[in-house]
Length: 96
Image (cartoon, rainbow, N blue to C red; front, side):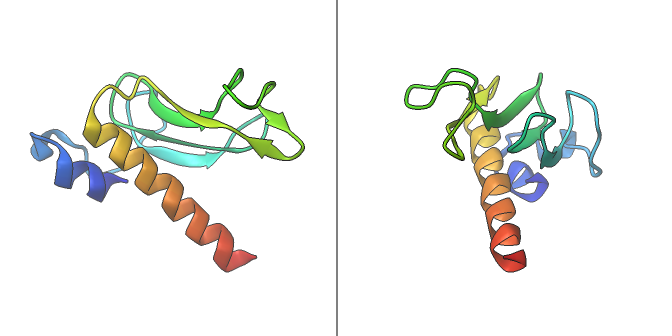
């Protein structure tokens, strides 16, 4: 996600080199209530299961979730979040 962010951001030198666990940094992993979430630089710019989605209600229905962006205002944030989700999908496929 950081590489994608840096390659698309107008000012890549402002991107930190390491992941942080704050609401302003990069992170990826399992969420408390299930599913996965990814986060990039920004004011809590993230992607995760929607609580009340268009197609799925209550985050998870029949084992499926509808994912959406939160505070991802810029194209480089959204592209980086999608790159993170894609990478997580590849990791999940490899581990079976």
